[in-house]
Length: 146
Image 1 (cartoon, rainbow, N blue to C red):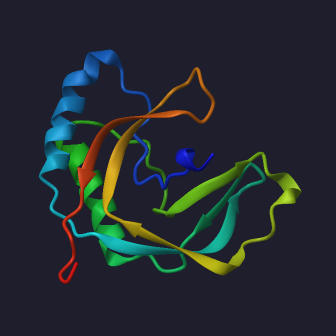
Image 2: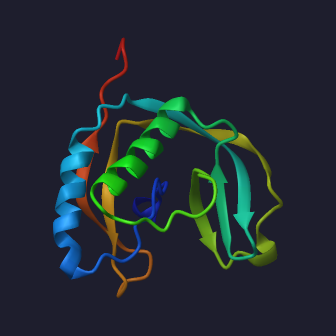
Image 3: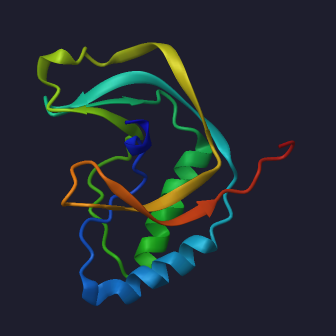
């Protein structure tokens, strides 16, 4: 189902109900981000071990890097510790438990162009596998000429 595909900018992990005030602070910080819309080219395949198969980008657009950095700063300012480990690898998960069914990492024959106009704060629904609920939507500023 296409509606469940997304690119995770920053994984927050579980936020205890006692920390809902921190989440409100985060929402306020996110509303102050003034970042520009951009285009993303998903042009390569990859995998994390034998479990997660994904498509991603060879070149991370500077606007996507800025958005990720802004989210890292906003979560830190709001007092939320993220579960971000290692380098930022922008990707869209397309299969779980892919095993050998997924080809080796490499270029995608027909890149997918993805215009990015906003970003969302999503909540995963643990009782429903791969189900998400939108908590908040944050528009990006149109680029010059748009």
